[in-house]
Image (cartoon, rainbow, N blue to C red; front, side, top):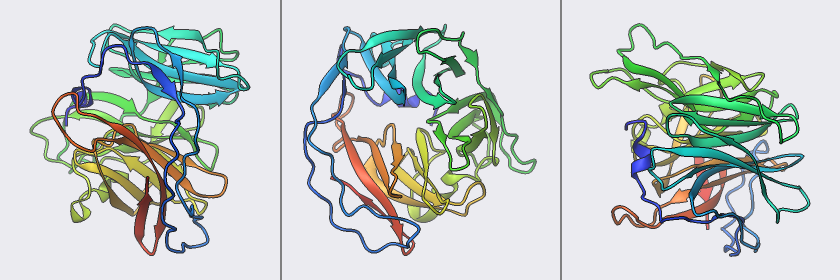
Length: 334
């Protein structure tokens, strides 16, 4: 799948509003089977009845958001004329933690190429925004008002094994969500390189680690990370794309990965695994996001497309609880 292919899945409606939260209460899921003590399961998946509020609507196509609390709340998103517009900006807005009604623009970033997939997170008390424009760029702010000039992330390009058969036409690096791990370092699953058409080697996402949120080192080479679980029993297909990571209390890494087939949830011990992938049954598993709770459970949210009807087909957001028991992964959803 070409790196840019995700933009071809959906032509968005003109000028959608940017909203947060939900207003619909979902039915409780069945209680899962007992789990090992190291993994605390949720007895049900429940999204409470909340209000829906538009936080930014300026006539542009505003999408692909990231959100984080660093003192107040920050949302970073791509702003453009439409979903596939060649020119775009990354906009950052902020609201006080006890407000969430008034949002103000505090930063804006642009490059010569389309700006995509912004991330925002707390980096030692500073707000850090990362976005992709042929490569990954970042900017930081200590007060949310004054921002550093956007610079390219220092992300290692892992060399394939000599006998792998992998060749590349580009060393483009593309990190997806950045999460803080149990050791206090930052982790991200990333896609590195554009694979040559005649390349015969095994590709796949690479797990990265950073101690400062700026310099990211690869923990393994291609085909050795969570996407290694794809071939088993027809689970997943391709190289992996949009992805997120979280940890269970026993240190197991849980990854949610969009593939060329259904979305996949993979479990394993980083960095070498072994990795076991489980199909979610969700087509066009867009923008997967994982959240580990204080009780040891994990929530998963992602886009689902219930029925494919060509360009412009409808999509919905679903929320699951994710657990693993007796070697079987259970994704409990609405």
